[in-house]
Length: 228
Image (tube, rainbow, N blue to C red; front, side):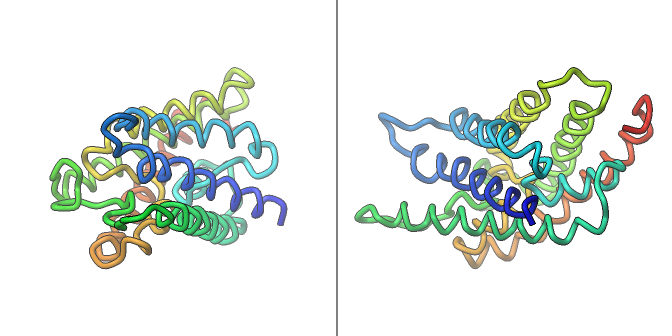
């Protein structure tokens, strides 16, 4: 239960910090943080939680990460359902808090609410194939970073930094394409509030990250110098 509570809190922070930076801070001409700021915000949420709850739950914060770690032999299958439930619930809590904060401003319009999308809902107008490939490849790389930096032979104490910076880089690459998911829980939480088109496109942001994570788990088991 302590692990699940930690995952709930961590995923709530990821959505509140990452999506919150996009919804609350990115759009002001004079103060806006832009794509770079939002990318950094997502990376910082993971970096801070890695050191805050990594020793409790492993700081997955993402169903695709949990699946990838399972495929890589680092996580028990029996713990998967509980972790995924806690992550989705935490993401929904973060999105709910964000909604109530954002709607406290006169003239608030929900809009896309930092949801993920392709086609006309892609920030750069990228189609479904480009979105699918982007989410698979970048989730694959994210899991390679996680599996590599948390290996017993990796330098100690730097995993959180590498993973946080890795997520920042992923956002710098893919915000224009899909608004960056690589995390089904994050995508679900925002889609529920955005509704309609976001819910209709949500399948891609579950399928692609999990496919990328599964491939990464298998590949890392092959290239790893030994079982951790």
